[in-house]
Image (cartoon, rainbow, N blue to C red):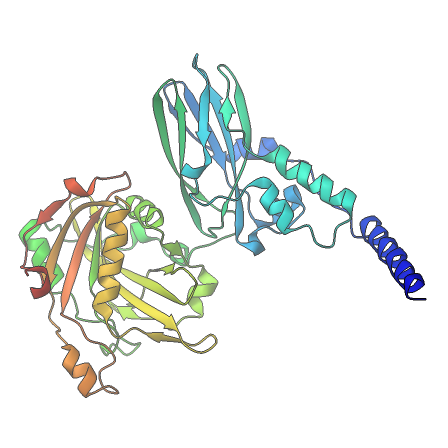
Length: 399
């Protein structure tokens, strides 16, 4: 009797497995519109290597791959490499994303609910769409690299190696369907018709020292956190440097859901965020374009803050606001985005003892310093940074 039951159970399992293999939904996708990619592609050339690249938006990606990859934090980058040289060229996908996804990895992640035939078709589809590693002499190859999703501007590198030479490209592409919060403003024309002072060195240092100590509320009361970071550079250059350093734009919708901070009588011009590993905290940068410049460079007064997630969606401000300032600066340094830097003494010093003694009246503590950073869109060696001796650095830097 027991043997009969085991035999019946085995037959049932085999039958169920067969049904599972035959059942499931089909895998449906649409052909790739390569003409569309080529029409909007950004292009760069270096010697015998010619690059064209574009980033599909969420809806376009779902049509091509049959799956909403953006919802999984995955973003394809379309790449075309033309090799007009006489030697084999090799593309390094790790240059575009150090932790890129392999095609079959993503197909495997999405296998559930599909029939065996659909899974096979999905594997073949993802594999066939992948950007090849090697491009023969006189050949043009194209395909997709599966990267981590950036919902705003997409900054990335492309490295190609051929005949013992390295060809390096940097791109900044706008992702279709995303509007950053600063898109509501015309930053280039913000002070059009106004006599904007042009400060150099000593005068610039003094103007930065005299910036308001803190952001304000809608009534102009300085109740926010300190202005502790100042960026100097051309607008597009600053954006490239921020993105290369791992900071991500916020959308108009995201920014509208956040409590605004005010400076110069207006709310912040732009918000950037950096999510820490594990997602248990994040850093936030808010910037205001100042009514003065330095040569051809714009000057942005900034506020670096650190939040850690407390309960559910509730986040709390890290009271050590200097930590956020120093973290942001280190991100710029290690991303090779800094041309020059300087310390400037601010007007507000809140000792840590004040925070411990008046916990509910003093939400943060600070040494009162501001870090001024001149950013570069092109990689800069940390050993070549110009250190401007405007003010002595904080005491802990002089030990």
